Image (cartoon, rainbow, N blue to C red; front, side, top):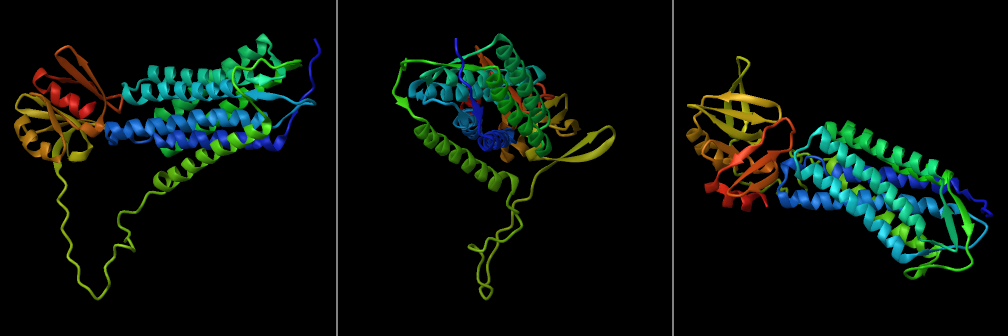
Length: 370
């Protein structure tokens, strides 16, 4: 068996790494602060993030493949190439759904990272299977090594990015993701040889490297466009105190301003100190005899309000009653599960306990959280 000599264009290698970084940053920042959004907004953000991450894995692979230099002409099977992109996007989607619509724990983060690592591997080897007129030949050590690297680095990326959802952690997670996708590709390629074939064995139509280049450029434009959009809406938030030049009235014309409704603060105690908790920060309220306990992402507080008073004051602020002893903030709920004639909800911060939903409030909860 005669193997074909090959090399890589270093400029395209560098560009492929940049594509992986941009895809990672876009996907991980798109999913930041989803607990503050509605279920529909969370679903849309997860879908866009999956396209960014999965599409980024695919784009990085084929940008690097455009840099593959061999002394022969070869093509790609369009059907297999498309399937490789769908595999990456769907597997990443399953990982993000697990992270954002299930209770987030160390185990779910581990599973999500493993899924994404498996998606990187599956995309790589399925994409390589689409090559025509030359056949890749793998070594067991290369497959095992790339598998360990892919899963390990993706677990690290998601553990960092989802351990604490800060910009710093997301940035480090982005770097880990970019290194994971790029390193896996080139580690696998370093132990791959190619054999020339006399005829094609395509499933779908054949596409040349030139046509593939157009597809990769278009997908990269989409990813970079999403990155710019994320950068303008997330990384550079609008200052709420800045004036809108379009909406600003002329200086010589008096304008009437409607006073903003005062924010409701919940008087609480914690460790002997009196504190005030903004109603919007409350995840849920639990009745405790003639008093209540207030749960937020920062922890649990004691409140002198009875559950009836809490209901009277906080339901107009957006909280809803799901049980005679519980009020929940729908914007903090990440998962609702029905069990026969009852249900339960869980929240974004993993330190918060689940809250039961009684039968009398089940229909209302299903409408709000589905």
